Length: 339
Image (tube, rainbow, N blue to C red; front, side, top):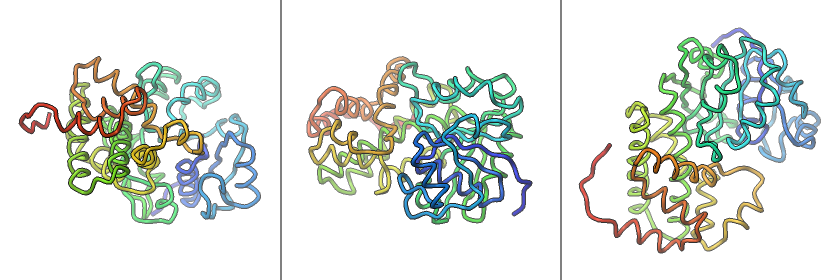
């Protein structure tokens, strides 16, 4: 599979940012990655490995790294943003003026800004030029960084309002082990990627409490139902939630041991406090903050989201896990309605 080499900047050297930078560099693109931590830059340059966030994965010699944003951003054709969602606005306020006029920004962040309730599309569109905003593209789908780096067969989706921008993203990322589909539904793809993290927290909780496959299957199914309800009410295509950014990513994060959100939930189900769990984590579990925004969106649009409500109560209101499960099971009987 051939494509012309592009100059690409990757903002964020966590596990996912590093995995994407590795994939793009091996694909033949000229890639630079920005890490906030100078020690991570040193690890990449000196040892060809991100020992902090993606240990054991060899990185291409061609991959450049810097802790100076301007060195990674300036003059790039493509910019891949893998910044935790709560910091995207802060980072892009600093760099928006340094982007070339036709730079295509590809967002791989899965979350909703808590302070404003804005999706990454809304955050970035407000900081970029009209041309750059039109080219915005969003990468989502079931994809653990470690498995992508081991070149396990993986399928993802890219969404954009611009068909040409979506095709460009598909072209630069697609390899024989990383299959990329396109989708015009930016809203649905973003909501699916953000909201599945909230349900994954609940999946971890019930597993940590010792419940089995019956409970998990019910949670995933009803979690998808409430994600779809909110998405459709906000204007998304319901079919999106049956695809990679919806059901696909939801199943992965609710069942996979590599899921940070599921792991946080599992430890809560085992009796640990959120404070002690987050205090020992290097990476960000997006759902912990996103659930705050999800609850506000549900109330704003008048959508019933009982699982998300209970996750919020567990994390931020001190509710006991057993009480949360009891509240869900004792809700009034009703028909199974999928919208």
